[in-house]
Image 1 (tube, rainbow, N blue to C red):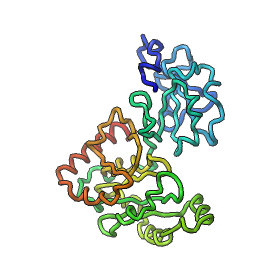
Image 2 (image 1 turned 135 degrees about the vertical axis):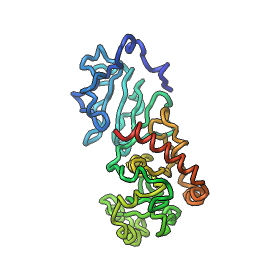
Image 3 (image 1 turned 30 degrees about the vertical axis):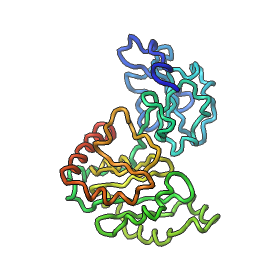
Image 4 (image 1 turned 180 degrees about the vertical axis):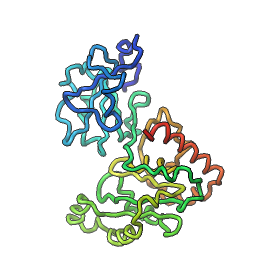
Length: 305
């Protein structure tokens, strides 16, 4: 099992004023957070001067090359494989071919994650809701909210179809609404009509809350697992100054070695969804405010840019 001591050559990085990074641009350009990497003082086009070699796996189709085909692979020594794919299996190379490389991924599972060697990264938010950041807890319109897609017959997101999840909605200070409208869901419903239980009634409820932004004016924001354990909603909830309530199993939170997440969010396994509301209602105002302040600091330091 790899660690920095066992699978990293520190001598490549000695006597460097800046930690130099080489990217395999001939294969695939840097993506998401890394798009400006090549313009920074940390980037080098000379592999002989590199401390770290980054391989970007996100393409429009599964990655075709094997890492061993890369010109400077050296069994993955000082290499990092990067992907933001909704499913690691969609972009992954075979586990046995990773060699000594580390993983920088948005889908990080506790069971295979190598602390201090791999890095869990967040999915970049689609939207930011800065207009709500200065609102105090309990002075917001809602107590707890979620509006999003249901996943039928696939992935960690199945929990969004659980009765325990649907029953969180009370139509007052708690709004939890889902939609089944997605081409993959449509295909699965045609194949097996039993998979679409409650879809029509849930759609009617979903349509009653047309403003997604309005629902971010909330003290707590649900972040249930999607197709993978991570969710774009994570960063969106943080951007609104709300406290994320994760519902997920077997997940390593982003930047877990840097961020003291226990001071900010709360996390529940999918088997304890029914306990969420009571647990949140039992928290004192002072305790919630302290969590919100911690979340705001985390967002500004690690997510806002």
